[in-house]
Image 1 (spheres, rainbow, N blue to C red):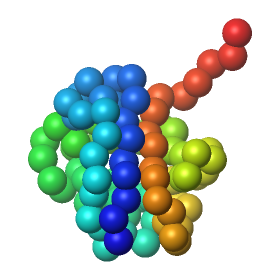
Image 2: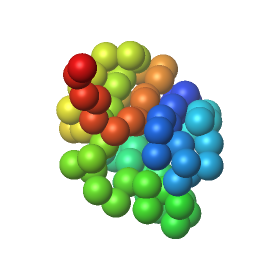
Image 3: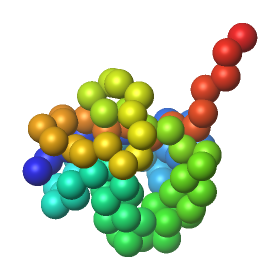
Image 4: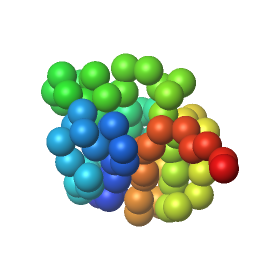
Length: 83
């Protein structure tokens, strides 16, 4: 499946991209992260502490173990704070 993957804040800085199209066999967001981490060191570094990363699937906040299903977009970003 093809997905648009979006990276925000320090994830974008570490990976060097704001978005990319990814061809994946992943069943869940966690599987996708594992595939990305195996690509290159910059992805491994960006996703080394998943406690500091939030995920959205088609613009809805979800846990990392969420199935990808028929999703078209996955976004990764640091936790948000209110104010």
